[in-house]
Length: 559
Image (cartoon, rainbow, N blue to C red; front, side, top):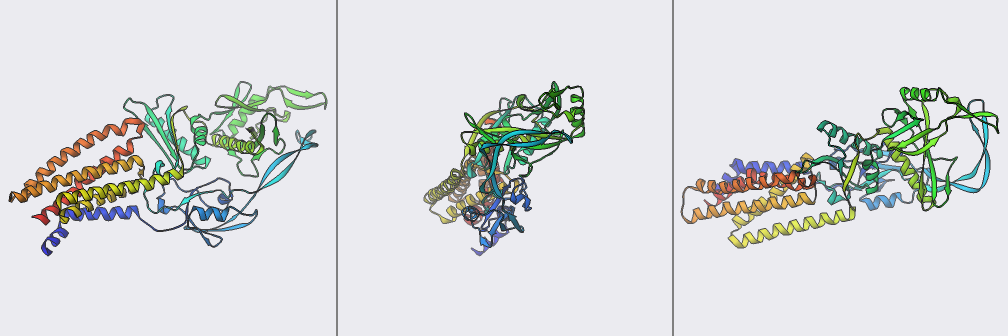
């Protein structure tokens, strides 16, 4: 027996299997750390101002920044985090300690502008020497408590295995370009989409191109923690923003915009307009942008020949004869008067405004700020180079995702256990049943290790692929075992010949599986890609790593 063990430890195929298992465990990096990982940081929030960085998209899960304590109180999970941040007071300091460094976050008070049933006179400046009185509704600022500190978190990952959308919750959108794109243009489109989503404040983004067997082009977008409405607003519309004076386009979103005001003290609900109630509540937002010199010059050229409109009541020149009109996706969304003093002037500062409506005041404010955020994102990133049509959307809640994980682990464990029992009843030899069970587990570990190393997401389709790979592996091991036992029963001395015959059968089965999986990589707009690739990788690992090691084990132990 000692001789056989020494021979096993010296066999290069078995050593190769052990090396792959060790490599896979290092790549998976199982850990018992507690805390909540930072999924994203909202721009201009208290957390962003305190210096907490936006997580990098491709960072390994266990290397994410993890919040371990708040005000010296341990944070073990998401529930602890929300308990410690739910009843904050304004202008208080939060001492947050993460796996990277400590931060001091100062909470900010949140205000709402409320209109009163009174009016007041206000003086507004037309230019440096002329002012005008206007009557506006009186408003006052009401405190709504504390602003969200701006962190989106989830329970700290225990491994480097990336969970797909099915297992962590989020939104998947299948988009199709309106026109077929060349490969380089499609790559540019995907980069533009990633930038738009990053500027908007979304993280854990997967954007990839896909196709089907008919040659159709698709783009698959998967985002954890985002709502279906946000994705539709950002990606289903081209986001073409134009400002026109008459028939002249003076600037567009993207390269013509140098700076977009986004901080709370520079952008928000317009204090001069506030909110009003009609059939529905409506709130007006306002923020400023800075144009490039080229765009400012185009604006000067467009206003140079306009007439100045005089107000007979005041006897002053107030505005030019044409307004500046704002178009979003070729639809007019707003217009503003142009001050007479801007005639022929290359002004770089422009005020942008718009509205949001809702069934009540709170809903109108929320929708107004959401519209402002989307418009700011489009002004920064510019329009998408082509219009995209939504083909299919899937939204999965994080709660369902967690249940999917538990059920997948349970069913996979039961499947492996059932196979182990069946093999034990078939052979009644522990020296055969236990190695087959160990080989199955080895294939799972190596497959998960490769997925963690290359950043492949494990979703329900990939889990199905893992089970298929394990099933084919068990078939192959039974073939090897039966051929070996036949040789033993017939007193055949040439064990190598028996193993070689078994591997001919295995290689033919392997080729059949791979050929069957290749069409699935391209079928179904890429949604079956995870199943196909996981199956191919799994059976390849089995044929070239685990099955040879198992055959050597059987030959040494039963010879």
